[in-house]
Length: 299
Image (cartoon, rainbow, N blue to C red):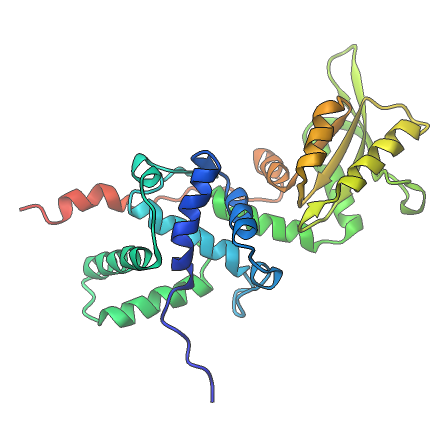
């Protein structure tokens, strides 16, 4: 006998944690920062973080976080910025949600949309429709949803392919003489490039590419610095480009080493988006439900 699917929308449980994360992160943060904070604070298992929907293949966790954010926007707890940064409103700063309150917000907006469609179906059926849509549809909300998808694509390509792709990206940013090293002889260096600052000055760089889903170990960063210092080719900068993130210790090392530049997954995605390399920009207009609510029952 097949197990009956629950009508409970799983993303409701993240309403409160999203608010908590934003408060802890200073009132605004990127989706990946919020997801990371929730994962660490609530000690979410790797199985949950990496679980995917069977039909769409999407990662469940970032999808659920994005849907939670959408309901919080509709309820006036987050602003509706489309620039990939989620921000608390004044109401959001003073609100703390328990499970029951989060569920009430969910049902409130299911009912509002049901009324707007003049849908006469029972609220239970409308709720089930929302659950099914959430599991099969990627929530479109500008960069906030593009980023996880792009990261997944970058993490799925081969190591050699990622190195060549990073070389292509550097060219888009006016680097010249981009050279991918022979893998057997790279010594930890995946490529070289030159950036012409002006007619008189050029900047030579090494770069290393790491397809990570998690955090790049600090030891890898230290080893890269060692390779830079001992390599026969003299360079002014060393870039470590990753689809993952860097530890606090690695970031401190970067601050103290003028030759080191760390590019994490968030920054990498922004770089692709800025030059529209491999991504197609979309302009999406959706009703601001909070705005129209004041007119809905006006007599």
